[in-house]
Length: 263
Ligand SMILES: Nc1ncnc2c1ncn2[C@@H]1O[C@H](COP(=O)(O)OP(=O)(O)OP(=O)(O)O)[C@@H](O)[C@H]1O
Ligand SMILES: [Mg+2]
Image (tube, rainbow, N blue to C red; front, side):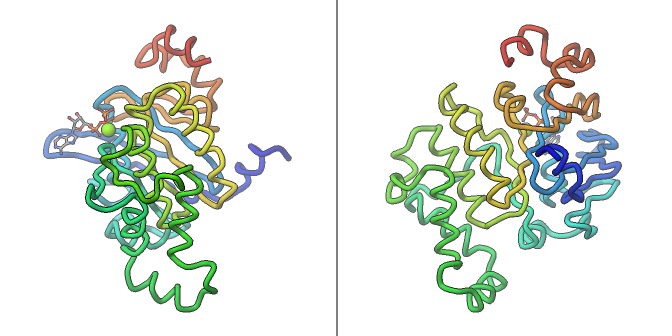
């Protein structure tokens, strides 16, 4: 069985059924069905205002779903508070990275690792020394290639590396699934390719990935399954090659030029 076949055989880690997100009269996400299997890298793309951030917000609990349901690891979590979902292993990054500028990179990660609170502290008591939150921070720094920046302040880093700190901060909580909201925004081509390489390694490290981004070569290059939103509705889903050749996607979003240049 190939790698894709293997993930297809895995149960869905995250599943949304008929998810609707609204802000007053504005329906930002409409009847969205999607799933992320354990060990996979799944993408969500769509034009500005399509509802991508709203979907992440509802899936992670930062904004209530107005209807539909969300389950994580087989458990219904639709009304569960975000920190409880995080404790179960559902992590996220934010579209605009807010770091503590007076804390070092490492301290920014430590705050996140400690943030899971009493559950984490209790877990640490029973874990061998090599597996405590300090190690989660080192693990996340290493995965993101930030070891040399650990003692630096975020203000000393390029925009690209600050973005990576945002990713590392989410990883320091050892999520089973991390939902990333435009981690490549503001990165140059090389930085984006490097991020792609790092994202590819996450499933082997026990972290599944849900990636929202406008960088087509990143999304088409690292995701095995991609969902496409337009005006809050799912207009396509499939493998990168299916998405590249989908008339609905080309018409609504990508444009032949962009699809060709992402190949
Ligand atoms: N807090 C809010 N209050 C009212 N409307 C909102 C709010 N947040 C988002 N919207 C609206 O919901 C729709 C979806 O927005 P959302 O931010 O989810 O899109 P997006 O796909 O993440 O866009 P982008 O690519 O620009 O980040 C848009 O019409 C937006 O104006
Ligand atoms: Mg957004």
